[in-house]
Length: 170
Length: 432
Image (tube, rainbow over all chains, first blue to last red; front, top):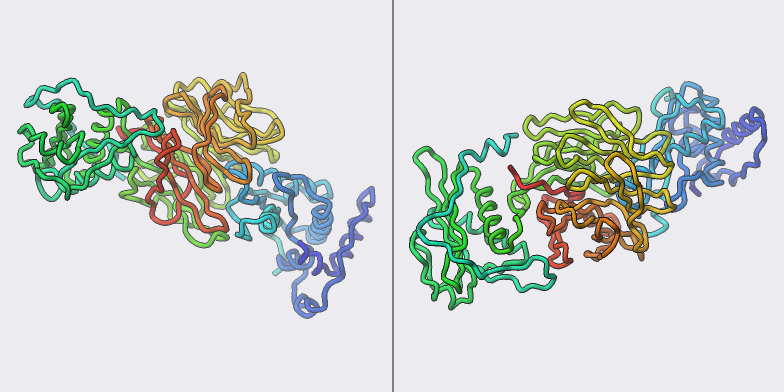
C-alpha cells in the first residue's frame, strides 16, 4: 500500500478533485506523498485508461484488518481515486477480487473474501460507479501474494484488488 | 471410470467349514487411548505373485490402524503350506503372535482370482474368521483391503475402513500460484488419479454416500460454483445456476440433497438443493457468515459454522433450518464442523493460541477434546466407522500442505501418502 501511495500521479489527484466536485458532500481525502523521481520516466509511457494506469497511477489494491471486511480510511482514499478513474473511463468494467490471509479456515475465508469484495464494490457504487460495471469474486486464502507466515505478509494478503475485465485502453 | 460395483463382480463370502469356529478371546478395544497393538502374523498367502502382494497390503493396512502390530515375516519359524490344515499354533506362540492369518490365491479357469483366508486366535487355537472371495485379477488390492476389514471387524467389533477411497485436492507449484486439482486415491494412497487438469482451481470435494459422485467447488471460467463430478462417466456438472458464488457443498446421508452456501450481497447463507427436483430451500437468513454445513447421519440435523455472534463458532440446527443454536463454547474460534457417521461426535477446527487444531465434541457441545497439535490443521473428515479422522495440515511459510490421519482418541497420528502436496481430504463410505 505504501508503494501505491508513493506512485500517485498528478492525473489521479485531478480525478479526485473532479469527483469531489460532483459528490454532494466533499470529503477530506488524505493526500499521498508526491511521486518519487524514479517513476517519472517509467510512468510517462503508461497509456491513460489502461490496466497499468489503474494499477500504477491510481492504485488497484485496498487492505483490510484481520478478520474484518470494512473498508479502512486508507482504503477509502484509494477507492475514491478508483471511482474517479472509472468515471473518467466509463467503458471500463472491473472485477473486485476479495482475498484473505491464511489465518482462517478455507470455507470461512471464501465467505470473508466475498464480503471484502462486496464492501469494495458497495463503496465504489456509493461513489457513483454503476453496479453493472463491477463484478466480484472471492479467492479466500487461495491466492496469497506473500507467503511468509507473519503479520507483515498476512496484512498484504488481506486485500481487495480491482482488476479490469473489459473496456480498458491498451 | 468404471463403476466399482461392476469391477468387483461375483463376490462371495462364507465361513469355511473345515474348522469349527470357537468363541474368540482375542479382542482389541478401539475406544481406549493407549492400547498395546495386537501382535499378528501374516505370512505371504499361498499362490504367486498375488499371494505375497495381498499379504503385504493387509500387513500395511493393519499396521497403519495402530491397533495391530504385524510381525516381521523374517521372524517366522513356520510357514503355511495348506490353507485347510490347522496351523501348528506352538510355532506361532513362540514368536509371540496372538493372531495368525493364513491365505491362498488361486487363478480360476474363467480368469478370476479366488482368495481364501482364515484368521486364527493363536492362544485359543481356534479359527475366528474364514472367508472366500472371487474377483478379477486387477482388483487384487480391493480384495486385500476387504481381508483387512474382515480382520479389523472380527477383532475390534467395529466395521473396518480399508476398502474406502479418499477424494482430495492435489497441489503443485509455488504458494502464490498454486495449482489445485481434484484427485482420488485408495485409503492407503494407492491408485491416485487426477480428475481435473489443473487449468482451473478446485476446492473442498466430498463424496456422496455411494462414492460414485463428488460435490466440490470449482473456478471454471473464473466463476466459483459448486459442481458435481460423476465417477462413472467422468462428467462435471454445475449444480444450479446462481448469479453469485456457491461453495461448501456436502451431501445428505441419503444422497438426494446437497447442502451448501450461497453468496448474495456479499453475505453467505446456507441452502439445500434437492437433486431430484433441483428445488432449493434457504436454511439460514442472518447477516453473519453461515457455511460448512454437515448433516447428522440420520439426516434430521445439520451442524454448521457462523460468525453471527461475533466470531466463527459451531452451531446445530434442524434439517429444515429451525432451532439454530451455538454449541461451541470451549474458547477460540471454531469452524468446519463435520458430524461423525456414528452420530456421537462432531469434529471441527479450533483456532486458538495462534494455532489451528482438530477437535471433537458431542453434538450438544460437551466433552470437547483437541486431538492434533499442528500449526495449521483444518478440515476434518471421518472414516466410515467414526474411529479415525483425516485432515489437512499446512506448513508455515507456504511450504505446502499434507494429509494426516489420527484416531479419534488423538493417538496414532500419521501422514497419509499422497502424490505431492495435498489438502481437503474427504473419506468415502465403505465401497459398495
